[in-house]
Length: 230
Image 1: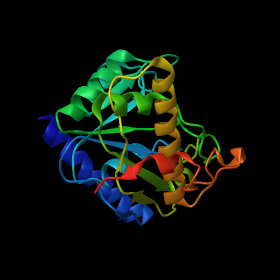
Image 2: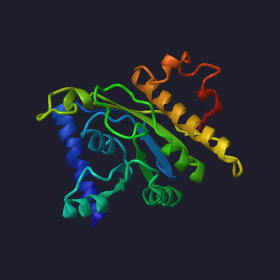
Image 3: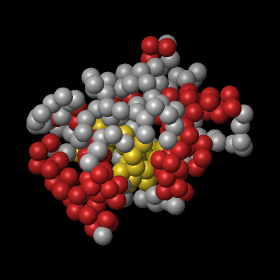
């Protein structure tokens, strides 16, 4: 039943996008296998516009306080929302995401940990590295262009702007054997930094790390330590 409901919402979101926002999709998510999709987050429109850009059903990690109404909370979870308690690593939510990926499903994460107030990319959290280290899954970077212009934080009504979803090539990371705590932390940082810089590259926008003096894709930058999945 939830598959049917998800499919209906997918069609509705796609139709609204095409009619109101001149919706476009560039690139795609691999058709099979467990995948982690990592996208920028600047608007409430991000989830429906990202979801209808994929031809596969997806599950979405999101803040647990977004939908406090119990009935609505339960309905959204049945449709694919994975509520995450903020302020610490939510092992239950991340365990659910890891299980889904291992089962060959698509999970979406917003590495910044919340919506951007100004539309600019923010420094990513380490949670994405936890999932990659536990699953070894490819990460598909995605950039949502225009959703902030349509419905920025604090806006009461949407504006008519074009929305485009850019999917990049999957990135794989060498997870290796069990690592020491310090090495594990560095791995988490490498994953989060690499992914946010790939997202910035897709959108042709500044990375939150450019102020450190490294540009995305430089030989000394973290992207040099990851590779595109073939």
